[in-house]
Length: 109
Image (cartoon, rainbow, N blue to C red; front, side, top):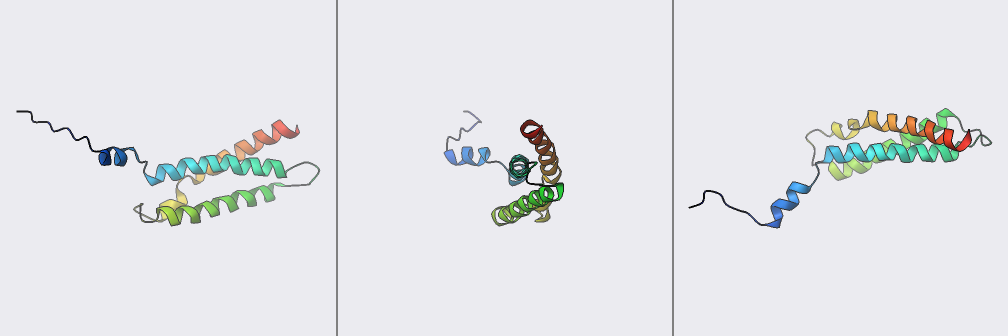
């Protein structure tokens, strides 16, 4: 007799392939940092007079919007609701500032 049991149900496969909420939040915030940088670059034409404070405002606005969206989606799936706000904050702002500098250099210099 075999001691091993093979389970072929698709329910186990589906639950194993789902990502946990914190990595999803982290990586989407990295990508949204790039999107915010692109928005800041497109609005920061040298003729318009767009400055760094306007760029910071856009980055903060995008981050705060994502916080409320993620809070509604993942509040029951994380152990501490404060983790939704703090997950990916450094990666978001680092990707935003680096990509903004890169995009601005490519487009306007």
